[in-house]
Image 1 (cartoon, one colour):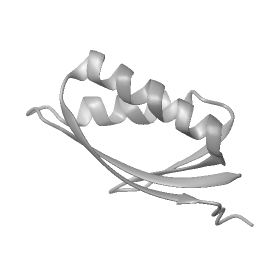
Image 2 (cartoon, helix red, strand yellow):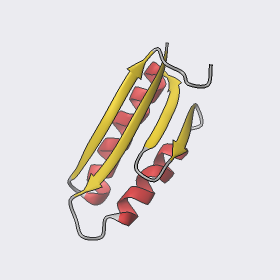
Image 3 (cartoon, helix red, strand yellow):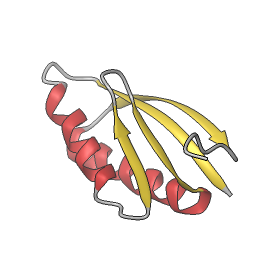
Length: 83
């Protein structure tokens, strides 16, 4: 099953741009999913298990690297805007 996820990161720190940029770079390092970045959110499209594993790894990594952040997500299982 495909899934589309929209995610926005709100780091709880004054210098919020570097953590957001790093998160986007980390998401782009996963070659098994499509990542599109917009001004207010990043959209991820791919196989459900792959995307969820990538998110799990990325959120844990982000916390270790940058500390607390709020992540706002929309998950749409079974939806692929490209098809």
